[in-house]
Amino acid sequence: MKTANIYQDLTYNKNKPLITVLFETNFTKEIRIAMQKGTVMKEHKTSYPIVVEILEGNIDFGVEHETQHLSKGDLIALDSNVPHDLKAEENSIIRLTLTKYDNTNRVEKVAEN
Image 1 (cartoon, rainbow, N blue to C red):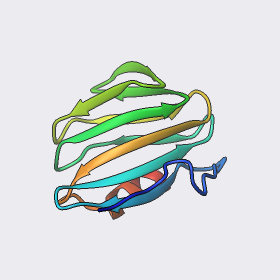
Image 2 (image 1 turned 45 degrees about the vertical axis):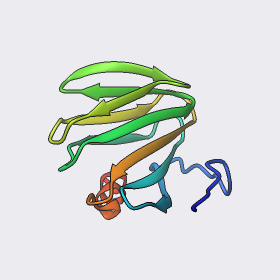
Image 3 (image 1 turned 45 degrees about the horizontal axis):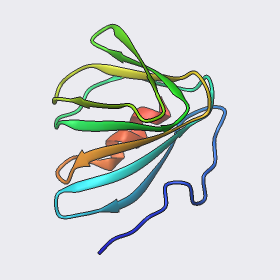
Image 4 (image 1 turned 180 degrees about the horizontal axis):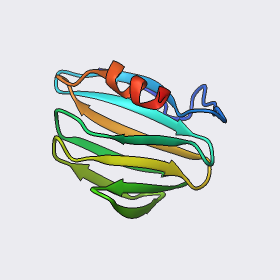
């Protein structure tokens, strides 16, 4: 059994999204992305499918150059190799589900740029 609290030790950074690995299971990696209003994750793509859930806030989620306005409770699933970007329209908490085979360092590198 694994447990985590998405809100525990939550902080925001005005310069970049903050990435926290909550836990790994036999099939997924669960990640929290804390985005302060105005922060962005530039366009990138993944080698594996992902699921993104907005737990708090509002995100402009660009998918192949079209913007989806996502807010609390919204989920979006993307196949591999789909270009996407994120911009926080307000302080936002995002849950990202990766396949076990994906690399969490990749997410951290995207947040750095």
